[in-house]
Image (cartoon, rainbow, N blue to C red; front, side):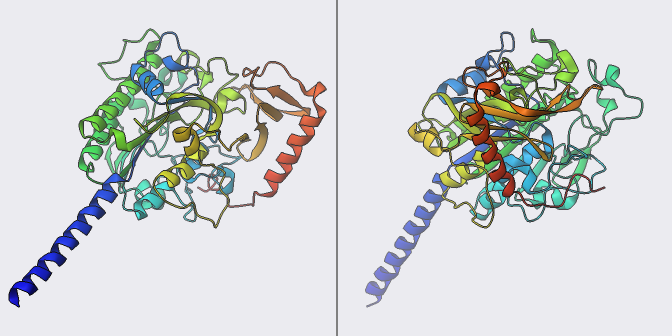
Length: 465
């Protein structure tokens, strides 16, 4: 009798152990997600996107082994709104994270990402993921707005743009072409604590990289989400001793090549820990190049204008997706957006997109894994709180444009009739076709009205101080 009881107990123990092992295996098979987000990188700043002198072998290889998207957009042409869109899957106008008065958050800002917004980090954390934010945050520097209050287990980085906290008297001549660390009293934070001020920005790329690799190694046995948001190549530009003076493109090229090195280090860490075939890696940027800074800024390639505008150079970005044996290699000309990362990550990790609010992203996993066409064919180009332009398929309409962004001659130009471009044949937006396409303009105007009717007034977070 005792032997039978022992056998029964042993069977129960074995079955429980098997169930436990199965649960662990299923947990470990959940895909990891790594998003690498550059700052102010232009569409034409990578070798694989056509730059003739900036060497980016690691990103070029990712684009070749994975997917290179040629019509991939940020959700805004400036920092704070763009980051809001990526992490929430919603246009920043829906959360008050854009403003006609102040375009982004500043060190004196009292606002930040509203508590009612759901970040992808929060959903993943609820599913047992380890989550880390490394780099630039820019969704609020007060405790309630920091990454650790918004679904991230840890944070290491500069909480806003690296050109802020500028000391008195430090003008462009000192901070632009030949910056020094002492001109910018920006804090480097670990979770909620400032650990260095001013942050030594010459080593910031390598330290972000080290912190990211440490996180990967420490969580190799659990599903994880790493959001690595580089503070560069946003002006002021800082490169490490190893990279400074090595690029034919000057200091800007040095910085981009160091970011490319960082990407290579992240991929190597994934491979060395046996994680590469279970990890989706996405590389893109928050908005286009800061053209106001001339050679210290980047290039949008054949696209018109740059950061701070609703022209293509302001929001169309490199978009690279890599996941060995999962992502189908190819060059994708379908339209995509950083807004799409939220629902796509939900899909691949087995989560449902919340149904209690409007989402502006679409699931692009069919394009990534099945080579099917995307369901997205619309892009809304906001200039702060105002809708300036819309893309529908190949057509783009401009109701207003910002000219000479960031200069003393900046002006807003209203267009009546609106401007109309065929982006498939004219990505540089040179040839206005409005005169011969009244029906297209009317159709796009209906889309504009329908979209604006879905936008409800919310508190402007950027003016709070």
